[in-house]
Length: 351
Length: 211
Image (cartoon, each protein chain N blue to C red):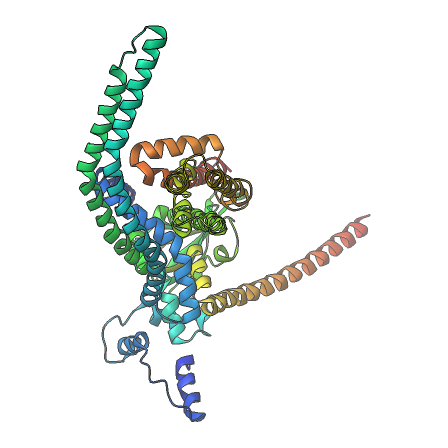
């Protein structure tokens, strides 16, 4: 019989455990529609856990209630700016719809003028294939985007409901999930596995907590700066800048785009206001890069900049923006686990 | 064994204060579970912990909370709980079964020397909770089918964050036990060193006599 000796049972336990973990990993990779909101919820739960614990300790209510309190406050903080943004966005989308054909006509007219000018001056005619090709290409992209827009909105709505739903239960029942998961960890690896899992969670949690603080600082600087300058929608722009700042490297640029867009509509591309906005964003990012990051985030994630860049690229390749957000802490945690295993193999056993 | 909850209610009565009109559902659930007629979870972890000498200064409610942070682990005969030299993070109470502690003795050819067998309600591995990244000083093996209740470093961290009083009590209890052991060891050591000095003196005297 296979189950005859103790050694075999231990082997079977380990195999069973490894199979379950592999299965979970496969499911995560195979079902992005579920795994992306779950990973987002997991990240959120890690970042919010300290806050829920804090509420629990100081208000003496149970975990469910304190989770609900944190959710209500957070919903208010996110919902109010969002409620402001959505009508503006819908108006602007309509504007763009009307102005796009105008822009196209304008470009074509300008191009024709230029061709005639060049022909008159030099006698050569410009090949116009490229321009029209590019224009049709842009048009196809835009129409494709418009066709797919309901899909994107559906996904977004799915996330809007799923992410808070998962986050709520991940926070409330964290202990239950952890205990269930640990209960079928084989005895032979239990302590080490629990320890590594704990370190992994702490690393992720600390990272996202630090990122959260960083986002608040950057968002705060930009909001107050724009308010001082009297730019419209300062709160929304600051909020967006803080949010996009979570994405490494690309984030600050993404946060700048709506600011440039709105300022351009309001004051024009070459106005002094535009320069002031650009300088403000540069200052906020300089504060982030030179003060917040070295003192906060890099204390938690001690990775070489090259590894950071590589992991962000790999993350964006596999899971888009979510991948870019998750990649750094995941790589940091993997580094931690490898260090732990390295210590185990090279220093513990070979003593 | 008067629990702090009972004391609290009693004191409120003595001071003639009105009892809180708010129902504590967790407490009611616990009292229901703890009623003597209930056969549900008769051998539950809080009841077991009540009988552990180390945790005698915990109230029943505190034990109930502490039990939430502990993990129940089952071991078959001959299973190793932890090995000497491994980095340990866990502190175990014996729920049932017998656990043997063994140490590799390099001076003897026999290899492992079993030096102590622990039974129900005793505990081992408490140093792991207090030390940081140190190695187990002995190997623990289940002599027969055993069930252990363990608390681990991550659990202690959560306990400190969420229930600081209980965490402090646990650490106090462990420290008391360790202090006792340290005291005994110091006594033993001083006894041995006295004996050693005596023997050295005798040896000197013997040598002098020979000369």
